[in-house]
Image 1: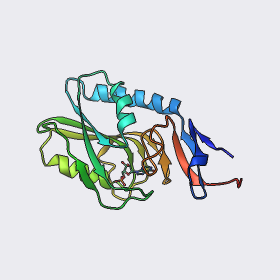
Image 2: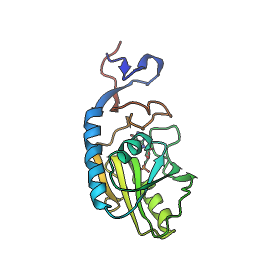
Image 3: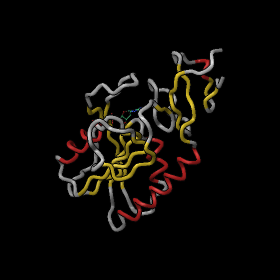
Amino acid sequence: MATKLGKIDLKNYNLDGFEFEELISEKRIQKRVEEIGSEISKDFENKIPIIIGVLNGSFLFMADLVRNINIDYEVDFIKISSYGNSTKSSGTVRLVKDISADITGRDLIIVEDIVDTGLSIEFLFNRLQEAKPNSISFVTCLKKPTKVDVDHLVNYVGFNIEDSFVIGYGLDLAQKFRGLSSIYNLTPKKDIE
Ligand code: IMP
């Protein structure tokens, strides 16, 4: 059975009858990020958008995305929390750290790691809207089938995936595994050691 994940030895982790399988390779991610970067560069030509990363999960996607955008932009971050240490959303979104930029009249591009229930996007849209920006666009690396209808809010999607728990490329399980360059699926273990 697979005991290594990138450079991480899984023997150090109690995954409770689950294991990780590669879902999206680093190569596929990087190619898609390039494509989204070009699209955004075209769509926001002659504007100076503020690109706002949603912490913690978006940090790798955000870093790769901005390096594939070839127009002027500014960068800021916001931190919200909905998962705690669990693999299920708590259903309540909480603001942990607010943005510092003045967003009134500006074009905002909010960068998410993954859209799951859609509650975070809905929360962010409602909150940022209050400051009367010129536009709010959302870009997410991954999108699961959402409970809340947020399709009209999400302008750029890296990959649509099934409803299962994933880690890597910024995504964590209880704050671990964020640094992996590929994305992995948490699946029930097939082999018994
Ligand atoms: P939503 O509010 O349910 O759409 O959840 C969004 C947030 O939940 C994301 O920004 C992630 O931080 C977290 N999340 C949702 N699904 C996963 C997953 O499969 N793995 C790791 N984190 C996830």
